[in-house]
Image 1 (cartoon, rainbow, N blue to C red):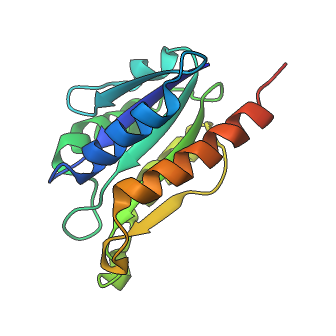
Image 2: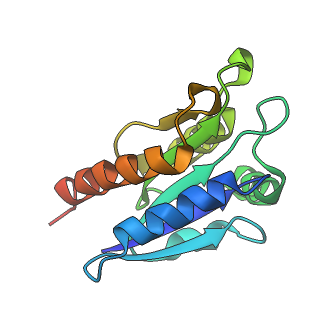
Length: 154
């Protein structure tokens, strides 16, 4: 099994979560590679395996700066992602109620529009909860990978 983690971050928190998830999941049976969204294009989805979008939210509910070009590329090129299976680990702060976790939501909605199939629920970490996102990431990603394996086509 191969997992590619795609990271959108402003302050490095999503990258830290992705690193923790990579350490937890990369066990010999599962190979994990983490890619920053800088300079990515839709062709990344031609890779074998499943994808995990790990992204924060920035500004008025936007995707982070390093993810903007990738997001806009997917919106304009509109690749067929019907063979893609993915999960979303979103980071946000509930004190911004109107735009809470919109970075993850935007990617989730766009990937679904392009035909990709989400596995499990989109995780919405809340920075104001007092729980460290990297701790939640560890727990969540292991449960997510179990779902991926359950839904693996024969």
